[in-house]
Image 1 (cartoon, helix red, strand yellow):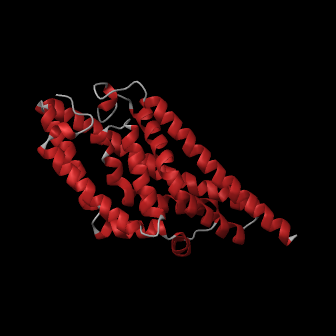
Image 2 (cartoon, helix red, strand yellow):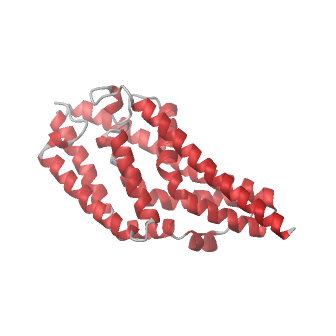
Image 3 (cartoon, one colour):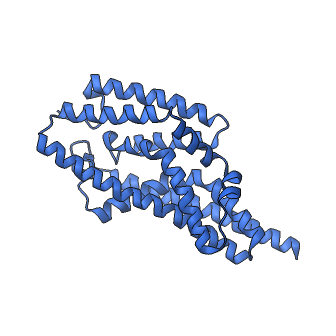
Length: 259
């Protein structure tokens, strides 16, 4: 009986990991398809991508799944292991997906805020009649801010929370499916605190810029999962800062620049 229980838990863990990978791959395929045929002169290069709020948030969630699910897997699997030790096997499986739902709810809320910010930025740019060079320099300023944030104690704290699944589980445990949802939201908040400015640089770089999306994904994965992740975070912070300064000096260095 004990062996059967262990095998079933292992099967569930493998199923969760496989589903996370499959969802991430599907999200990448959707983003690549969505970005195909859209160049820097199209509406997709604007902050809101020319989309209404529901579709923008849907794309934002696809980006979240593509970029974040590979890095959230260790936390989800650790959560499932803890759930399986405390609850019935079926409840543990359901609870893990409630955890992931809570995680996505936080990112959905951030997508709504991002959309409001994008619409506001477009309105201000139109009202001030900013030149292409001025808009590019604003993008460079966002990159500078993102680079500086990578070097702050708050970034380090959020990154530490994301890198230590056992510590998070031990200090944030809540019972039941609702508790799993709350824990997922709690972890999502730490993840958002860790990555929000890395996501924000997608606005000046181009929301459908697949190369930029892939680069940010690699940075997030490396800083969250590799042993030298904190060093990667700081090194990338310096690189992003330098690139932002370059754009402020030479606006044409921005990928979506068009004069």
